[in-house]
Image (cartoon, rainbow, N blue to C red):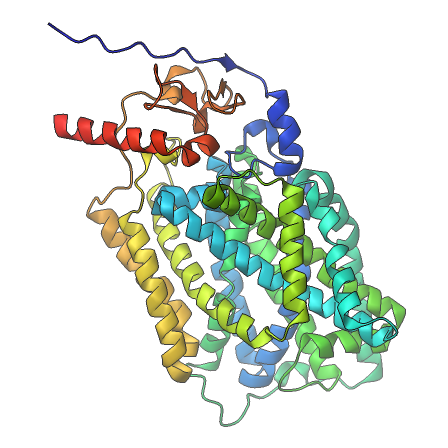
Length: 530
């Protein structure tokens, strides 16, 4: 006598966007879901949103500082190497994001397991907030010097507040338009500063600045410069969270022009050359700071210089607050099982940023960034192996919570190499400070490749899949039996904890303990049966 299995619940399918989902997406931007093809952005809008990252004062100051320490020639060699490396990585990560539509959290879920996705969102949210602290402090200090009648605390609040409304509406509403208007202002302003400095001072030797005498970099000057830029690998995580809005058919061109070599030619090389010239022509040497560069702009241009400082920092802060709020939203959703609206997440990130600005925590933030840099370098290394392995596949990426393990062997590699990088940075002296990031990155790549070769997979075996039950997983929308919203079949799964295994979406699935446990029991049963 055979036991008849219960019939599967039929899928409620439609081939157009659910109006309720579209309304939420206007502010939430599919933070905990796959971005459907209907929500992808044309290249100009996507470029203007991501190019908010072009105008950070960090790029000017870093290049000027490196030129003063290792010499202009070695600094420029390191910058060119960084452009090549980051351009290639940006191309690879943006291509993956456009193909899959996944956030950093969902991508981490695929590679590191459901528990690993929490750490990925936490690291990225914290790093973006720290960057927002630095950029907002730059604005507040510049305006406080110009208008000391208002306290620094008040200017700090203003510096934070002016950015928050621009990211509350999501990436498609304001960010591209706002940054498209201010991008020419940024470059024209920098050109005016360069011309005025060239007219006032003798700048003929700015490309021949000698290296600092007696400094121990624990590496050749050009390699040390490259390693400094390698510490900003968090841009790969930023890339994923923006590139998921790219159209798959434009993945190659976006990978080159928006997220890859062209982008880094502006970010590192163009900004670097301008930063070195400004520092040399203005007589800044050694410990060049954002405040010194900002004050130089203000002294040259007066009120327009103050406006240029604001433009420089406000543009990049839209990206900082956007990434911080989306990952904070995903993190709170996972940890506390609460759906936090984007507006609340943005305000929360803004409040944290403001509190940090009022306290003397800069030195602690620098240490925290170095520690997080180890986790980010390892994340990039492990993720890069996964990208290479899936480079030519046409299969839809598997990331659903009921089909991946809690914690994978890649997750163990991530944690172990990150801790090693932190220890090397903390106790390795000059060598550790210079080499911790590249060693962490390379070791993560090697160990992840070993895990990949041993077949230590992250996926669970399951019997029924809504993806195979519809005509086109990217066009068919399936209604979730928990939230009653319809999402693309790419992210839908069968819920073995409910009668008839009705469909469940990615966001509801990651919160359902019953669904996760039933999925793992099904995997165990199928594995035992062979």
